[in-house]
Length: 133
Image (cartoon, rainbow, N blue to C red; front, side):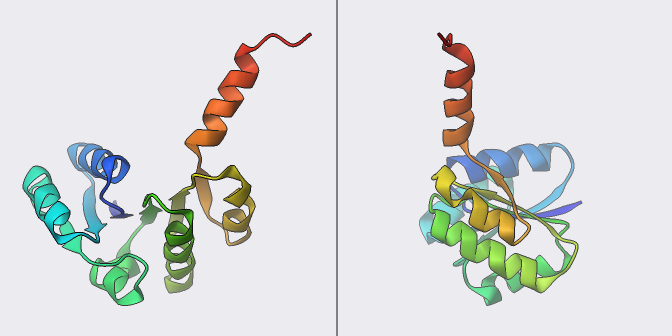
């Protein structure tokens, strides 16, 4: 399976590393050249320097053949832009986006994007852990 991961922070790096270790073909897009170079050394290549909110960068990363596009930058706005572009490129591509503010979840869902929110997950865990009167 071919996966395009956009955002080379802690989450993007760990995700790309694990996917590669599980035998998947992965390209990681990172905006900062120095960070991308460091990531490429750790991941054995498979890193593209560029702005993931730019359709040309996504095309260069292979979005047209990607089975899954994963937007994990630290900014909901960027992840939304990446998701919009990904859903416009190819019908049938699965798109997953990290969101920081759970209030943004609905706008992602309207365009058919699955979301992951650590904020929501932690809040739900707290609610389950605290006894209700």
